[in-house]
Length: 138
Image (tube, rainbow, N blue to C red):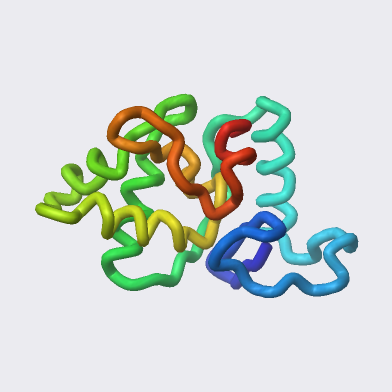
């Protein structure tokens, strides 16, 4: 994970697409208060004790990516939407779902910004930077 003074900037899985190299000292506990809160909330989420994250986030992306990631934050726990649904919500035409897919795939804050809740138009599970096994489990 990565944070600045404003919030969580990144939360990645090992081997995730579009992720930075991981340092060798991942076994040490996070020292930053934001990272500590994110670690607690993720632990509670995976233990099914938390449904809404409160850790502050500090995203950095293109204006389009920021619009898509903001839309992802509106997907409630336990629900899914399609890439096309997001494209419609953002008033994108034509190949909007494809563009949304590109932005979703570059989401730097996995799980907390719930890109795992986005599915194909036909209801199928589609690509996930964190791995399809993780998408199925979440």
